[in-house]
Length: 420
Ligand SMILES: *Cc1c(COP(=O)(O)O)cnc(C)c1O
Image (cartoon, rainbow, N blue to C red):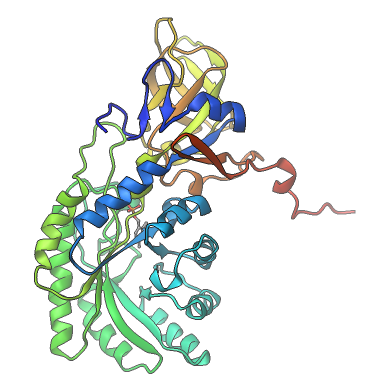
């Protein structure tokens, strides 16, 4: 669909903003605001782009659960045959609850606890992406106590600059992630000598919101060099995991299409038999979702006009955290001159803004949509200011499915106790 909005299944055929076949105003009427709304068709077509680009070669697309871990979202990807990239035992439990196959799960992260290792070994996951020498020892120990062998890949740090935001760049030497490239060989040798580990692959992930395919291809070449050196020592790998990171359009970015992003990288692996694994998060869900919120007050000022809405930084942290940009669209067209607004929430922090200086025609009570909010939106939300978190809805054709009820305030303090 060719479309002015970054959210591909969002259209404005008349005066109504529709996600697939459902009017956003009807979602606000039924479920209230703020509400995250996702499009099943957009999720599916984002996943299919990977499937098509990888057609004809052994490959597994493991959706990075941390981007959006709602069970409804996970169930859509599970039904499409996706694997999952997890970073906690909690995410593993979600994947299993949503019908995902544990045999297609890879477990990333620098701080896996013994309990998380046990849980993942018992579930029978595909691979542990191990990030340190100490983790190798611990995993061997935990697996031994369970009488199991843990499949591992070493997450290496190829030291390429992904040219993205410093908080989401992960493949440089100065990052906490992965093991240094020049230590990898030695660590593989040590792991190969441990009885309760089975060396399965190699992994890397260089950053997020990448807009240029070149750093990924460079990382892939470096990784492949290591794979061949390992093979020369008799350590053979059955898969190569290249992580996630493909960027999306939030504003005027021009990310490559999935096939153009993977193209140079797949060239590097031409003629190789190892299974390729990818861990996309943002590029599968980011543009498939939006945050629907209602204008509570308009507050004109001398220097700025504010539109105070019922969503806040606790619902969508990216603007406050990364100064991130989300497109803002008024749900109903109004016949009044547009004005520049800062879109802000009710939280007692100056950092509580969702968008700045947007030209919009608004009245009190209007609905607006913050676009491209499907990734790192709900999963980074909090209950700051004792705000119940948003509802979540997946639209599928003409049907809106509530996939997470709005939290109740009582549930927020149900685990707490007063003193006598
Ligand atoms: C966050 C993360 C991903 C997903 O990154 P995106 O930029 O959302 O595609 C994949 N793999 C690992 C190890 C991660 O930490």
